[in-house]
Length: 387
Image (cartoon, rainbow, N blue to C red; front, side, top):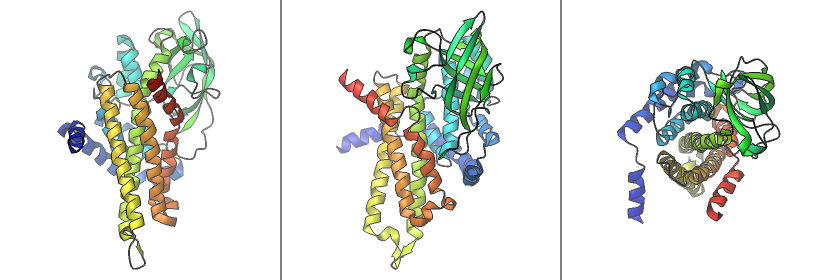
């Protein structure tokens, strides 16, 4: 068993370059994000200026080709980056992960003309992208979407509504899944729709449990006219593009959970070392020690499965999709549980905003829902086991 553990540790030990990248992102997050995170959360402030500051670090297109200004890194690199950023604020990190997922879809499935036309501004974050899949009546059953695009000469006329869209009304472009053909997955196509397209509008900002620093709203298309040249791939490719994007997106959101959980755990370690009860620090009580031991074990287990899944996606392994689902399910469940346990270790103080733990609990809860609910992750895993 020791040999197996040593082999796993060696395989997923970070390179010097990855550690340098991790340190760079962590230093930025500690300096520019962490000091303001609670204030932004309470004010529902969208820190788009600080988000754009991540572009010079290469975070505008982490795994987008370098010929259009991307960093051309791998999926393991990406999860290391998002974990480091999420230690300061999971909602901040998650927002950037969505931008990266949308940009990757254009890079991977767009034509060369589309890549050169659309991606440079996304890489510099002069423009920021949203991803539009979910609708009021279709979440997990994504192929049942009703938003439809009908071709009229050299434009598509789009009608429908997308729900729970991060950055809605604020972001510049919307990578949108629409129906162009028959019902079901084979009828889905992908359009890149700019914020100023005729016929696009946005709902009121949603009042949410967490993720307060990023706006979430409906995107409404009412005879919205979109040039055919903005279609990514051929008609009918959209569902494949969406699912491919979600394999990576699930790893990104898991990494954001891991970073938030690590932050909550470290806060709890510090607090329990300082807090006194019955004449000694509370970290000297065995019951709390057992809890912290379990939290530490869950963190390392989560990190290992996440790195393994990212490695499989980098290698285009045949079972990478299953591993992405496994990692997303395990890491986001563990991340929320660790943050919640950290709040408990703080006692009543954990319930106060001042310590930042309750924010982590609120922010991490949605990670068990988005990019495919954890129940759907179990469906994906089970299908791979029984097909």
